[in-house]
Image 1: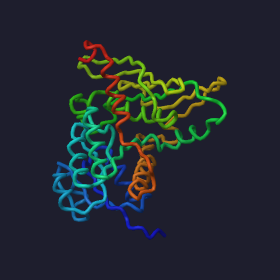
Image 2: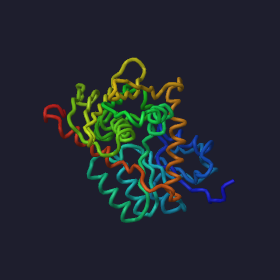
Image 3: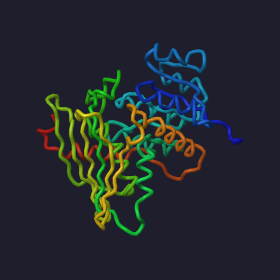
Length: 312
């Protein structure tokens, strides 16, 4: 049995994704303790009341509890404010993607984390997906990758639950590029490394000006092409997969959802992975980790490349 003290963590924002953190902390992640929660909605706090401290203001949580870290699970447009306040208080942060809704916000948070000497960690849950990791491990060392495709198709209205802010570009930071883009870009980083550059993109918007479709081409320093294919209007459930074309002509594929037939059921093991890696970061066992800025910069480059008429 480990003799290390348990890491004390708070969750700020009890939206649709928070249950995967709570379940992981109550189950497989034994070395991190849920020590406090915060949400604007009193009813959402009720299941935790009397068990751990509950707050409706994240600043009060930070001032009133002794925490090693917080998970930030608030709407995207509030990421910057909450992460900034936590980092300024010297508290490490695990934030849901995207890091912020502008590149400037992301850079400011990166700089503040470095100034305060605390970890800023973005939760890209697909990098812990068992099928993705199995495909990565299966790639032959002696055959180069020629092309990588990451496909992320879903009908967004089926996924947001009560968190309707996802459908407000001002709060989400955009549409499918801002929301699904970071997870897909991070899978590209997992396979090709972080040094990938934006090449071109085709973005399709609905009548409200929300980007619902996007095909984005990236390229690494060796000239390997990566295509990120996003769809927020897919009418046939969801399709989330990865294809790797090798230089010898072989096409290797994996379905992120294979073996997880229930809606969102793959997220349970992925968020165990998120928290385990975040715990390693907090214990000083990792020299590097994803802070979220690289994918946010790619999101910004996609939107900046659109002709002005296409941006609504």
